[in-house]
Length: 345
Image 1: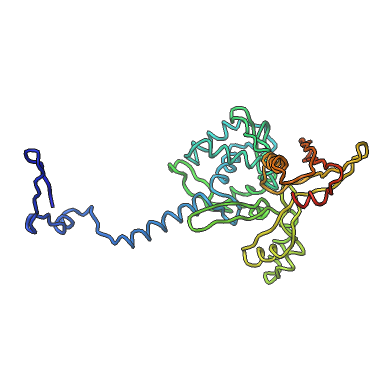
Image 2: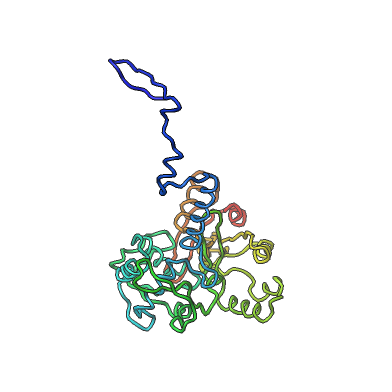
């Protein structure tokens, strides 16, 4: 059906079968137009996109525990000899090297990744040694990359050792000007030691960090005895070891996670109840907090509960944390039970 405007009126024209275009002839004459089934095309396009995200961006390789951007940063620093026995270099220089040669994306994404590899509250074993302000557990932003400096941490060199001895395969970079490793040699199980989190298309992963020596011993035990049981592994590596500490409540979730790959654990802050003798009052002292919990937001939430009188009996909250560790003091009013308040928290 077609319409045309004539003398201010809408005139309707009906196309006959003979006047309609012959689509089949157009398809035959133009080889650039390929008829496809929408369902088949959707399946193929979805799988291609999913695999691109899974392999190329969102999920780490189990062999070295790294996503492509992490691997490219470490490789670029190693290639330029910005190692632990050399002087620190400006992070702006590192970011430029990575973007220019290996990772043609935004500088913010590369710098944020670099910053996280420096933070000892994010990684169990930091892979980059930083100098300057790289943020805090309170969620403070790091300084701009023109102010901060970094170099490879000594442990990261174990991930890169023997990389030039044909231990791993290489592929061309984005503009075919140089080669980059598909995976690092990885002389220790980084996927276990530092854990990882990733959300891809149709799948996700969340692996907690573990103690380095325990993880290595567990891997050696599996190599020596491929039929080792989960219970035997748990005797060597009892569970995750988070950089911010905390106490794991219960073990059922751990067994499920190690035996099936799916499981959850409850992580609680490490607390003690002390008595201040001078004022004869009790206080709850927090020295470790759960992994990936923002300390500032946690204190703000406690303050809100106190102001809303959802929790009563707290007279004062002090954050005495410093570079040596976390210490939060929550003072309890007289005639209130500190254990009851702790349970409420």
